[in-house]
Amino acid sequence: MSKPVVTIIVAALKPLYGIGNQGGLPWRLRKEMAYFKRVTTRTVDPSLRNAVIMGRKTWDSIPPKFRPLPNRLNVVLSRSFENEAVDDNILHARSVSDSLQLLKERNIERIYVIGGAEIYNEFIKSGLVDNVLLTEVEHTEKEEIEMDTFLKFDANQWIKSSKSELIEFTGEDAIDDDIHEDKFVYNYTLWQKQ
Ligand code: NDP
Image 1 (cartoon, rainbow, N blue to C red):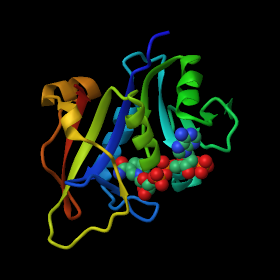
Image 2 (tube, protein in one colour):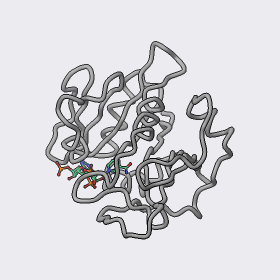
Image 3 (cartoon, protein in one colour):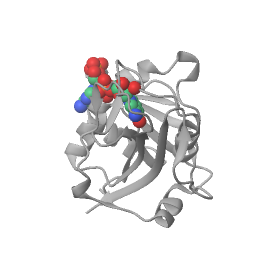
């Protein structure tokens, strides 16, 4: 059986790669959210969908009226779930490998891992992640940003792709540099396995 291609998509504050605080996101980056939606929804083959895999806590943090995330197959991981299709848009899985197994049986274009920390870190540790779409966030002011959740990302184990590779991978028409929103500045990047 061929190995599925798995991509992590995450926004993290440098240098420690903080991604969350008190169960929520530490920021509200409107353009970044729109990028996330476009990239995770876009397919080359119009007859296919992408899958988004998330932990139970990230699922819970999405307001009910916005979930499942539309036009994507939502896969939610919990150790207390049975492996099952809840409906056409939601799968439940009880482990990382079960989630990938369930997806093998379906016609999916890409698999995106969308958080949170526990799920990102388990996928990275598993060696099953081929690409990391990392939005590198920096803070433009001196005050500290409170973070309690971090991505275990070791940049030395990954190769940063060029901007044209990022554009090709995401299907975006163009990618801006140094996007300012709120008190943050950020850049979209793509990292691939060494
Ligand atoms: P997660 O969303 O990773 O969910 C954790 C839950 O997933 C666990 O409690 C468990 O559910 C289930 N789970 C974890 N591992 C497995 C496994 N191997 N098999 C089956 N189920 C599993 O929660 P975190 O608290 O780690 O992360 C949430 C934080 O991340 C928030 O602050 C959120 O805002 C942030 N985040 C940030 C993003 C970013 O791009 N900056 C993106 C997404 C989230 P159960 O307890 O039911 O068994």
